Length: 107
Image 1: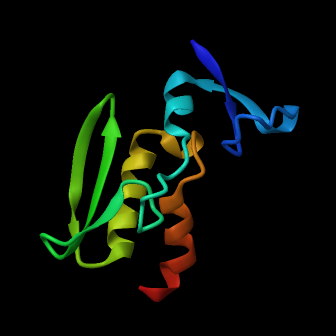
Image 2: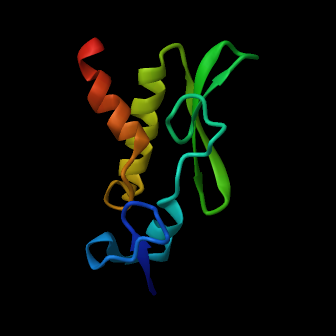
């Protein structure tokens, strides 16, 4: 079954150009980054306990740990790779994708 998704994530913006038909999974994935997210990247956060960046992804209500990294860019790259493996790259405007594109020259 399919659902109607708001491309810009604004549920009140019902212009035809902002709506698309997607799977229920894609619709569930396409949500805003939480306000308390300090990295700016969904699924990437700083762990004070381990002094490292942690990447993870949630699939079917299960959290999958993608690893701990010294560099925020590495964590974002691994989060992006996981999104692409799951086929989510067509579902969302990924904050990981945006961060990696903006910072790839720094590596």
